[in-house]
Amino acid sequence: MMRLSVLDQAPVSKGDSPEQTLQHTLELAQWTEKLGYHRYWVAEHHNTTGLASSSPEIMMTRIASATKRIRVGSGGILLPQYSPYKIAENAKTMAAFFPNRIDIGVGSSPGGSPLTRSALTDNQNKSLRDFPRQVADLQGFLHNSLPRDHEFRLVKAGPRIEEKQLPPLWLLGLSERSAKQAAALGIGFVFGHFIDPSHGRQALQTYYDHFSPSVSGKESQSIVCIFVVCAETEEEAEELAVTQDKWLLSVGKGVGTKVLPLEDIRKQTFNKEEWTTIQQNRRRCIIGTPEMVKEQLSQLQEVYQTDEFMIITNIFDFEAKKKSYRLLAEAVF
Image 1 (cartoon, rainbow, N blue to C red):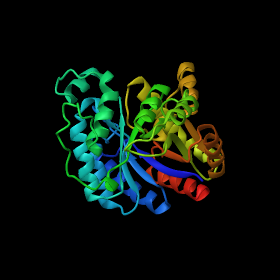
Image 2: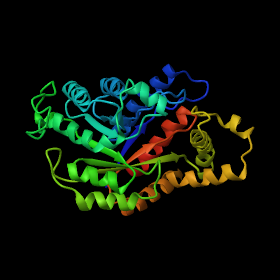
Image 3: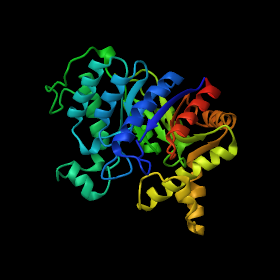
């Protein structure tokens, strides 16, 4: 069995406004729900003109209200910048409105440049090294399970919804260290193949080997997130993927995060170093026909021993993006 989900960074295509991009997010969520996708998660990015996903909790609430079945989550909330208590209350509030449909994924990214992070924390000196403690506190506030000697043991996160309605907690990571953190807390683990696949097999195996049941769950749960571009022919998929190739190249250089159309990219030339980077970035992606993509996902399923892939498709053309998700769903389901 293979389950498919969606990660949406709300990438802004050249010529589109942020408002149009967010409307595309709603349309894509409704579209992928009809296709049978299991989850729809939104990312968190700051101080960029090319990604409109700066407030995941607000986006989650809007998406959940515009859909009926699909699980809605964060991929992920950048916990080091915030209060675990406040995130727990946001999570419980969303879960009260949308019972058994909310997922809370958290990550340890600083959220941007040092200056951006200072703005997010209101100049408070918050160490990224506190992330493991913050995740444990978030779990404690969600489940009212903080240790008796915890300084905030008497502070309860509301609304006090039933235990069975509490949103599952997921940790996003790239390494064995983050896998061990998720395993020790007994929460779900999401591996970011789309960021860096280098340590995926070791990270997932570490998570499975060290998983300890907890108030959050009795069994391990994993998701692997990966770039996918799917089209009816390999040639068409490759052409569509060029816009994602260029976007990844620009993001890596910090020179722009809007997705450019193919005609703009064709006017440019890439040097040897850029071509090398593009080829390295292709390790983060699967590109091809529905049959090709399904086969490669099946191979990765054996490697990662997971039953769920979260698909991210950051190409220029929105209708082609919708079609990519449709073709993949038809091939897998």
